Picture (cartoon, rainbow, N blue to C red):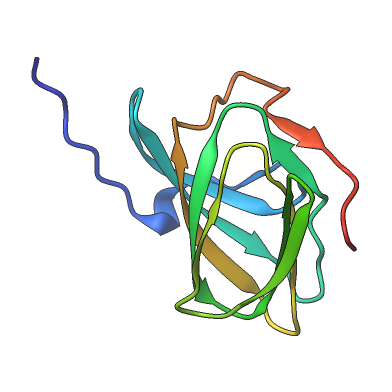
Length: 129
């Protein structure tokens, strides 16, 4: 089966608001495998704490600074976010992130792809901030 090539430029992607309150620009998609997006938080903004019902993510910070809190199975940690930081959000992890004094930008791979038609994917949780 031949699959089409996908090409997108960040400036052409529509911005939507994620359930956690961050600004998201969905980018390319490999149906059934993974999706790719950019997330942004304004300076001083804190996202709502969430966990995911079916997806896992890998994040890579491209600009700004901030922190992410991750909690799973009785363990929790706060990790500084700065350009070059790469991290994972395994299934079942509750997490919350916030920007410092500059806009925070993160690109992320979601596996499997983010289920755009599922309002229950992001489950609101009690966060650190």
